Image (tube, rainbow, N blue to C red; front, top):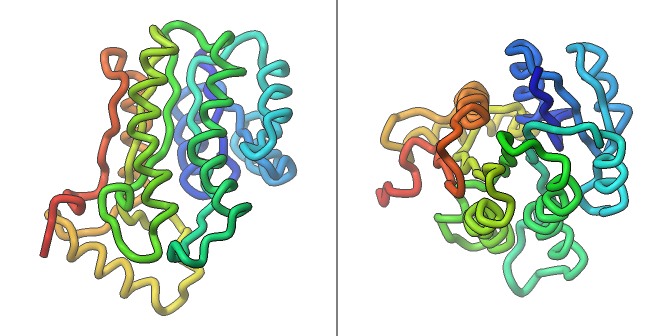
Length: 234
């Protein structure tokens, strides 16, 4: 049975991936800053939990030690948004955003590289905003864009372990529920900005994740799942 660590797996897209991976027969380990939340989901779906805080290298090292008998795949979904204009940047929040999205996964590679099985993979998350510059999305755009290069260079460094990234568009994963009545307008606008005429669903992402885990001849790539949104100009 292949073993998969899902960092950020206690909620959101990570939780959807965890649920599917269990159903498809993987030995799932849910990694999260909030260990209690990870344990709740793990108990529900038949997985295990470990504390991983991408802002704290010591937790990454400790998790690697705990899982020292080997990992086949790692999926990392962490983020720490800092959605402001350049003149409003706060250094600590800027560093946190880069750590969650870029530095953290590189430290995961550092500590888990020695125990990742040669046929395994590391999968990171980018986002369409990396290719769609706009006011207020400076930090999110740069960190997501950096993931494309991280996937390429880590693929060379960790070979034969495969390293790839998924870049979603707007996905109805529950993250937008906080908008209340405004959620529908956001999703409709997103749908209109694609070639396929709809917004993304969590299953679109989960299907791609499960495919990439098994796609043994794909590495160093960023897979765009946004209905062509980054190509549409009007």
